[in-house]
Image (cartoon, rainbow, N blue to C red):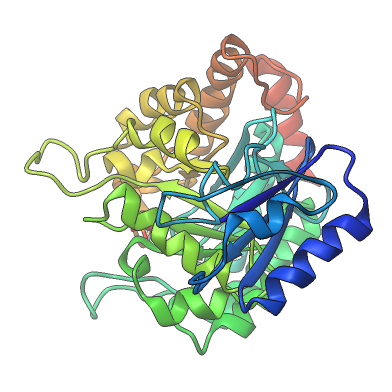
Length: 358
Ligand code: PEP
Ligand code: MN
């Protein structure tokens, strides 16, 4: 159930509603939106009637939330959730945030070179895997904590916040110490122990859709994290498994407007894993922006053919800079924008050269 407060409701009126709900044994999640405050009541609501709250001062109306994902639902919070990172990057607002970096952190020089190029092209967040979920146990598993240290150093040099995957409950405190955003990978979407663990940290979480995950399952998994106490969750479409073999996964563009309509959480698109093929990444990046994604996460590598993972789907640094130019135009066409970096390839090339030389 949600209790919608009147636009001018006082702190005392909001507190009274929260107190009343707690007395009745509900788990209470106040949601402070721009236009109004909503108090979401979850848990066992047997015996909790709407009339109790309808009569309280400052209350506009009470509603039952039909969706099983109560806190992630747009009914609970009509305003978009905006997640702010240290350094002022805001995900979920009018600016489309581009996150980019290698699939895996391979060594110090590699991640620093990439970080500089990502920044020069207008990327706002650096990605890079230090703990890699590989299909084969014989493949490169990532550099572990060393990789996190290299990412932190790249952040220090460029100022870009970082996102990296956490695969186990035990690693959550360590990854949360280094990283600005915790990524839950597709293979772990329904790892409920891990979802509960990231529900207890203060870092934002990007939850990737499972390889065979339905949209409503993704939303239920987000609900685990939000109801666990961490409201800073982003939902990521990264392609699903279908009968189609022309691409690595089938990038489900539909999921973007579906998620935007049903949830207030920011929606991120991953066209790299969504397609598995470098030449398709620009088209699907533009499509994702046009479809309403709040951010993109893109794999890039200075020499993709030599990458230790996912080289086939990684853009070169130059391809990435070129893509940013066309993304700005698509963003403008849907009344959004991508950073304030100078547009046009010459300006970008100069900026990139300056940063790399620094
Ligand atoms: C990744 O981001 O490199 C990754 C492993 O993604 P996913 O979990 O979507 O396969
Ligand atoms: Mn990858």
